[in-house]
Image (tube, rainbow, N blue to C red):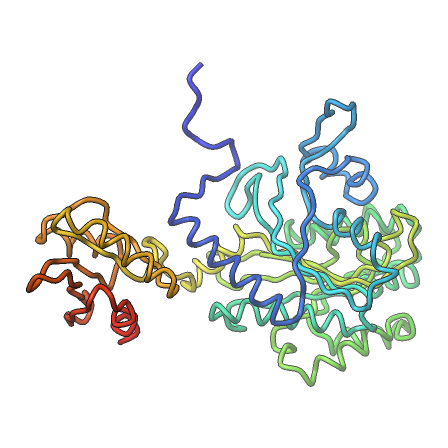
Length: 436
């Protein structure tokens, strides 16, 4: 059977132009994380499947994970997410490491998803996490980092918002107001998670399956109608829940004096995964009508290390996939053109006898950190300009014999400026390249 030329379903080939785009995104990710003093980490592509069973949700384990038995009869999985690996690594070092711990990664992940816009089976994800920060301060730093990152591409508050809630608020509503048991609370969490994806009639039907008392049902509907932090505080006061939510109330007061408040929107339907989030949860939402969706999410967690029998450790983090990030940037026309490479300089010879001189000059230029392409073989003079322009070069050199000496004819293809340089003085070429 002849193998297909296409990649495995849901995976992507990255030809040079796609790699240029990916490298640009990754560079911005690293730059932002390191501006906030976060350090890179990584882990293995394979983990024992028990690690995911201890932390991840049923949908991921049952439907999305790529798993197999290895030759040592161990059940392993290709990593579908980074958080369990992160937890395992932090559990090994947190006791002897100064807090807070600031880490980031850009892991390659695989899930057996149904490929569609914004979702593939293999992707890269920008993960940033902080452990051991004082209450609310880690949350504020992570949110500030997210806003700085998207703003570095030119995104504004008209383009995205961060929808935010607190699991402690939701737990207070469920336990104190609605008096739900654990099973009913779990069902209602699932209802909230689907609240924006179904019709109002369907939502009412789903709520009625969990809450039968009309008074409590009305309270819950009132909660779902909250749209800002001020109304939430009034709701908590009215229902005697302020004492249960002091940390979140303090958080809302803190953000009012910071620029990030303009990006934050209270949304009672944001609950995120039920497996480990314990505090603030959020989703980054694209406001453009052509891509009206969540592009990333995260939140605060305290119990992540308990799967290793470790004491609780406060953590906050988020994950942003490369596919959804690219969709966001393209939708808002914030992604540059990466069709052509961005090398500095190209050298051409019209006479093959000058080829070795080109190699020698190229070596000297590279020692000066000039990214230089040498055209291999001779080329007719009338083809040089078109060849260089098709490759995206703005400045080139043509090695030629002039008055008995080998020289370099310099050409600025944008400004149509010419110059000359001696082959023994590459600094002259560097100065030419640095000119406008």
